[in-house]
Amino acid sequence: MICKSCTFEINENNKYCSNCGSKIVHDRLSLKGTWEEFVGPFFSWDNNFWRTFLGLFTNPKDVLEAYISGARKKYFQPFSYIILFATIAVFFYKFFPMDSLNDYSEGFNKGFKTSNSSVEVPKFDMKEYMNSFMNYYNFIVLMLLPIYALTSYIIYRKRGHNFFEHLVFNSYIQTNLGFVTLILQLLLVNIIGISFMSYSVLFMSIMVIFTIYVFKKLYSQNLKQSIFSAIKYLLLFLLLYMGVIVIFSIIFGIIMLLSMLL
Image (cartoon, rainbow, N blue to C red; front, side, top):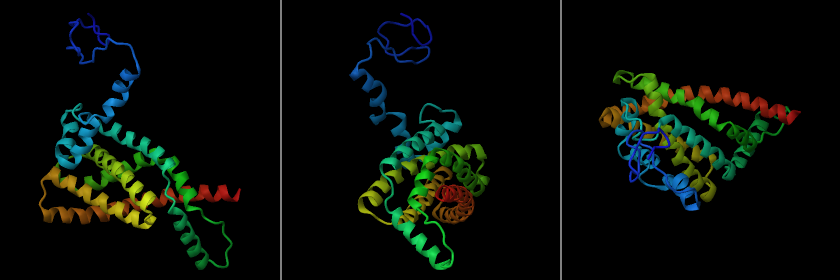
């Protein structure tokens, strides 16, 4: 019998090719076979996705070091991992938008009108702005990744990992944070109805805590070192992040104002 993937001769009873590792498939595609092949593995607790997701909470050092040390098949590849999240997030935000942004828009408009009572300006719709913003979410996630990597690289530059290795680390970290925040938004914003500002503060807190936790495990830091790193990380990240957000906000704000005026 010949392997259909690499043409290596194998035994008919083999389930996998001993040369290339491909699964040997004898049956034609059916509903059951399609589920097992494409959908089943995602829900299996023993696949790379769940091993990566759960491993970043329980044993982050092993997950982060696996890819850069050459163990590329043990966990989900970092850049595919973050692209998977970005794709899921785009559809998630379309089905579960943040309705609390309406209140945020009204507060923004009232504040702007109070400080500029003599100027007639178009009403700013924060929800519409965020919807437009989310249309480019995949691009924005990938653009922000170097900011996260630069932040951790500067904070932990004496630990021996280069910038590109920090790109890998932050791909894993930000993807896990992304999936967690999707669940939190659904529960806290869409179901319970907390304000957008409260959710933003909570998100920032979780991001810093989880990031510092992962690097604490990676570099075996004690509590004092972790707290000091957390303070430096938060200050530096906010500086870099706000710079990027201001640039993006100006660009999208101009686009939105032009669309309302035209």
